[in-house]
Length: 283
Image (tube, rainbow, N blue to C red):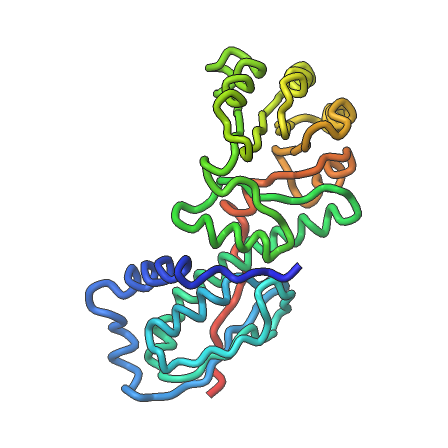
């Protein structure tokens, strides 16, 4: 499936805010004092390690907003696999602008490529099963749209984007409502006809209660493999099954083998290591 780019109107405020944070009130003192005005340079964004690229549009925009005379030629698209020494993009034009935008561009590119790379590793681990890897709302404030985009670049899918696009009844909702059935009945009575309802369950009794109330999806939270397999068998296709909790590249294959539809992972967006990418001068 082709990865649809994020619209500029969505990413430009993020890039502008990052540049303004870096520039402060006086601009790039170091570059302006050392690099002659009008000096031209040819550089390349180069991967230092294996991974999957995401965030090129944000990196490109960082250079262009600093100086529209900078030209960024993309060598590989978001979602592409890279390797040490491989040029991701070539950046040429006024050297002052290139150096001023460098850190902001690399921050976005490294962070988002790290998310894409981590996602790709989990997706590969569950290849051949029905399980789809999805992220959560555990995102960096302000960066949710681009971090979830990076998950898609890595071959994963997205869970809720916010509190307003689906109903997810968690354990605290259940506790306040007085039980799974009561919480589901309240949600069902008020939900629009297009709104899906998912409920988190901790044990098989809660699962059966959720199915009896017609939940669209069940979040099987922190269940061991034996219980997960039993839960999938009990559901028997009547609802979407989602496993979460303690998922790693090593544990994911066994979780997927239980037959769950989705495996949700919070650390993909909040703790994925940055992919090491640098800016190298070519001339």
